[in-house]
Amino acid sequence: MFQMNLIKNLKTSYEIVISNDKRLLCHTMGGKTVIFETETWEKVIELTKPNNPDTLHFSRNDELLYIKNTVGTICVYETKNFQLIKTIKSRKSFQIEEGNFALLNKPFTILDVLKINDRKQVCALNIETGIYEILTELEGTHIEFNQFIPYDNSYLFTLSYLEGVKGYLKYKLVKVVDPSVERSYSIVENLGLTNWDLVYYEPIHQVYIFVHKDYELTIMDAELKTVLKKVNLTENGVQRTDEYFVHIAASYDGSYIVLTSSDRVFILGFEDLTPIQIEELEYACFAEFSKDDTYFLVGTWSKGFVLENNLKGLKL
Image 1 (tube, rainbow, N blue to C red):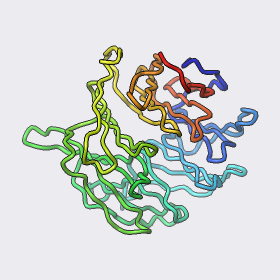
Image 2 (spheres, rainbow, N blue to C red):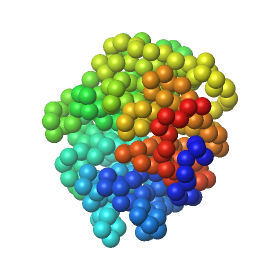
Image 3 (tube, rainbow, N blue to C red):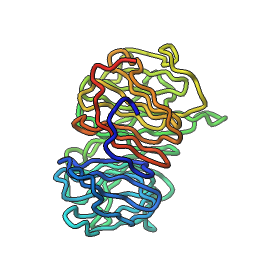
Image 4 (cartoon, one colour):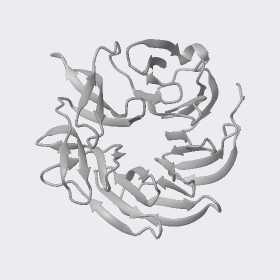
């Protein structure tokens, strides 16, 4: 697979995350989160709370593991003995939305999307106390966290909203500043793009990559002012199917872009966005390089794979 050495087969893997010190690997299944020790690949523990886990984050020092499920329950475990130390659920005053979130520098504080009085906003939420701070005043149907942007020290969100009498779905990008630094946010206007499936900021080359339904990729500069390049994957030999794109990532060194669709995983060379590897995988949902590019991690609704990354210099 991908002309890489297989290190570990996994069962259902909606997401696969390796700790910052590379000691632990976690993957989410339908009813539990499974932890492995990477030196021996022996299973450490299975965590059944929360049920239906969705998103994982290790704290910077790897002492804590945050797990959020599909209905917004968040559990925090210490990683020495994996004792559950904090849990927060939606309450009458707020509902924690499904999706990715960010860890802030303040202990047990996250940046997430909350539904408050039937409106969704980006908030700073303290898991320990349940106290939240509303950071935005947005009008839209959905808000989704993408990633942290080191270029301008902001957190990138996608805002979806309906426009016009017929209710056409449109997207905007929202940047939120860490509230411990400054309580502010901005909406990126005049992108020149109407819709996209995925957006990703590649920090090595300092560009944004937008993925569209028609297999087109748009590359924009770090200021989101200039389109640097547009490439259609079908012009590089990719055959159209009824697939849809679900995930995008880049290698740690910026050499490769990884696109995951519902049926395939594409590894593209960054310079010309030409496919290096294309692997058909039914119900694919996740593919990323580890933070130091040692591993290539692939997840589907039925299985997962930990592969040794040996892609450098490889061409189709």
